[in-house]
Amino acid sequence: MFKSRIFQGDLSPVPIPGGIHQISQHGQQSEQELATKMLQIQSKRFYLDVKQNRRGRFIKVAEIGADGRRSQIFLALSTASEFRDHLSTFSDFYASLGPPNPENVPDDGKLKSEMMVKDNRRYYLDLKENSRGRFLRVSQTITRGGPRTQIAIPAQGMIEFRDALTDLLEEFGVDDGGFKGDLPEGRYMRVDNKNFYFDIGQNNRGIYMRVSEVKTNFRTAITVPEKSWSRFRDIFADYCEKMKEGGGGNSSSGLGSSGLSDSKGTVGSGPQVSPTSASSPNPNPNLDSSLIK
Image (cartoon, rainbow, N blue to C red; front, side, top):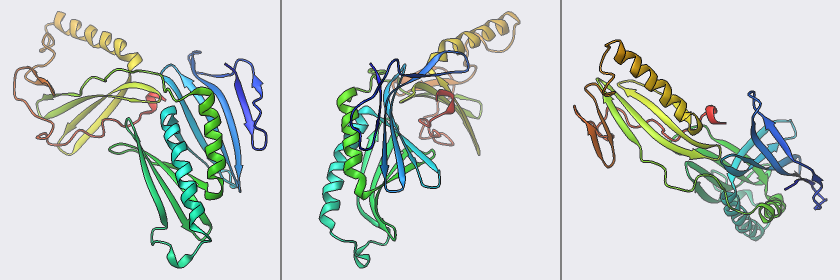
């Protein structure tokens, strides 16, 4: 495999042996860049980077405006394929519109909209028109909350953008790689007046567990990458053994007076609380976290 860097007007890949690896602070290879395309569309530059980590492959799309401002979204290869097809549809619709007519523009400026869903991410595609012209706004957000990021592609450049995506997908395919099985179902546990939720999620950086603590007027959460689960388990087990040896608490059961539940039943004893009857709902279990970036 080689890294190719392709610029507008030059559709010939220039091989760079070995590619580029990003090295983490611990000296381990965390992410590999496989190919890059750069497009100049009006006053904007777009970089389409095919990347790979131990969980699979994805495309990072970065937009750099004339003022240097940078925006970016991430697409799994399968999502990039779907986006490529939408670009064809939007381009055909744009070609049928004719010259801009300010009198026929909707109040919100939207001329056509679509949505894509991939795992815990949603993508909103809106062909819009304003005083500066027509453009395709692509917004990415995390299901059930989280920040929204977006790029804006000038309408005249949608075909060029589609062709660049097509070149990358023809080279690297549409298989995202990574985990293929079903993720475990979420579970919850009640301790005194607190509810703890355990939710397993996946994004283009890998699998993770989000542990949320919820009580009246308070909620907090941590996100643990799957590669760290064994270490977390060992640390908890070590503390349980130490507390047991010291004669402390209910460490032997690990539950105290609480119950541990999932959608298939309940384990343990004590009062049970369903997710719908808890004082607060599960707070955004699939949020991204910087811990797995």
